[in-house]
Length: 206
Image 1 (cartoon, one colour):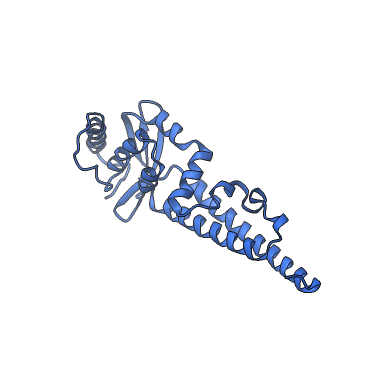
Image 2 (cartoon, one colour):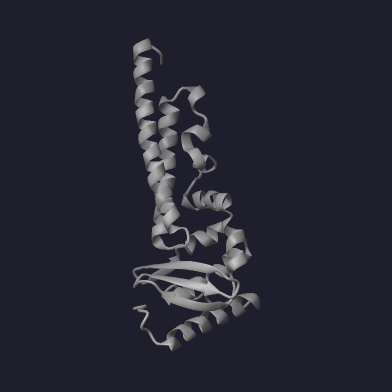
């Protein structure tokens, strides 16, 4: 779907109507199927039950593809760091805050969902989303694959598309940065582990 700024105003009116109907359905307990993710308005409407239930697992599923991919990479990187530290680091050098930095509380996460829960706890995602969630006042296309949704509560939500699927991209840039930083941390952990292994060989320790 093309989201050019030149689209007729009626398109955005339709999108606002979709969101309004979806939010009303949620508020009245309607069991109708959730809105489609084929446009930013539908994807935005799907956030409401996640925020209402304070469910980060639900919210994870509504993220844009790049955000979910970054979280999956962060999960794999945390697991790799843990394996290297357990194998090569001396016991007195395994402090989680030192080894994992800001991701210490997510170190034992079983999957990317749990990693996102830790990220949300650190960034107070749910409270900030709840504060800005409301009736849509504007949906503006930034590019063919990105858009901004603004609400009556002053909220501004970044949305992004991959293929035909839109999702919440508010955290995308930060998660990409975190993924890169944690990758650098992994490189350092590998260098440290090599030094510790060499020291043990030199001293005959096991």
